[in-house]
Image 1 (cartoon, rainbow, N blue to C red):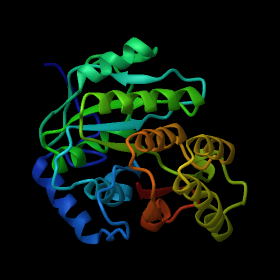
Image 2 (image 1 turned 180 degrees about the horizontal axis):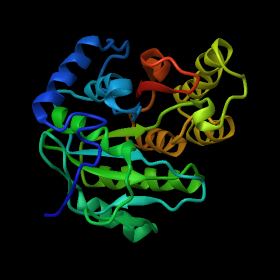
Image 3 (image 1 turned 90 degrees about the vertical axis):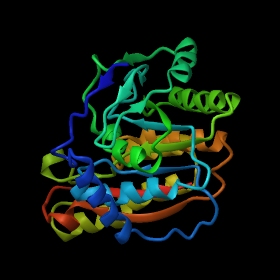
Image 4 (image 1 turned 90 degrees about the horizontal axis):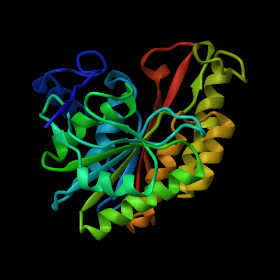
Length: 283
């Protein structure tokens, strides 16, 4: 079975399993305890380097762990525009420092019979951090689960793919968890977006208005609105992934409650006029 090599290991996160585990254990110690009871079905995670947002992503994925190990983890991600084609990793496995994760090829095949995709393989793919940064956490907490990774643009037809993906997983009797990968507002000269100027005013606006508005929209569990708000306000780089995660979780019957477990920005780690917001949400 061919393997898609990890491209960000050793730079955005450690390349060795022992070093990854050390960071994960540190992340767990710093993690906040969710208020929601029961077993979450899915969540929203950020995808910057682990130094900046690894703790948030780790603790969202950790919250999905319960006594029954899932068969399948669906991961939505990729930086796409509304007119971008959907992407799917259709075969093989993904490399992580803890060992490889197998793609659920049967589920991928059924989806490809219903929808048109830009089909990726271990030898032919678009470099992407949004999904890869989550894989060591997934392998660590769910060592036996298979995954299906989808890049779905912020467009209404993506929601149909997400719902159908969940329906097929249900039909196959798979215990399924869902992850949507997105960072929030990219603010400052590095990103060509600074409507409130620089300094404290810009930082406060991002934290208290722009990012908060997107977070509240995700918490409302309205996939269509997640896409529209994220695109209109430039408040999420992958609003399609977030919306599709919500749509899939709702299909699986697990999105009747939502909770923000942590929020931060890259400014908290590295003060700068250019910074990015990060949120961890569970459903």
